[in-house]
Image (cartoon, rainbow, N blue to C red; front, side, top):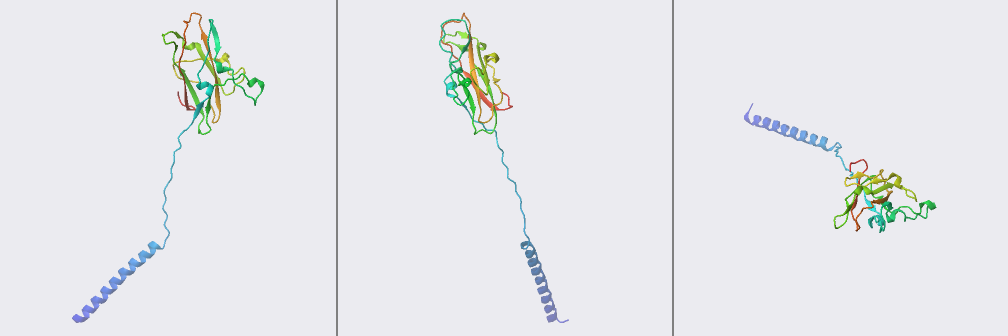
Length: 203
């Protein structure tokens, strides 16, 4: 075969090679763009427990036992134990407690309340033993409930104060004070603290 013919053959084979490469790439491109593709991802959110509570005006005003002029005193009512009036209920709802904690409808969990207090004392250092200050709570109130027949002594240790309170509901409190005959004259004060926690959690 002559040299010129060899060049023609080489050129032809080269052209065929390039054409085959072009067709392979073209066909591959058609296969890639001619099919639908699917991609996946996930979404995620975590909802945390949230609750809002509010103290009634008369409870936030303080637990007042008034002025005592003779001793001993047993189960002295706090002034707001019996001043509540409910005109939408029976007459027994009058003389109810107006001291309560409310669980807002903005909450997403029922609430347990915990309670503790420090010592009742005067600025001079005289004191009334804390167990002499007692309380009881209930989700309803009337002229006899919460009852001092079920009273519990306040403590410096935080303790659960009653049942779980549902969203949008209240828990009512009454407080009482025993004052022994030997108590020194003076004005006695302390602080009572309420902690709201998610139902089932520890205080």
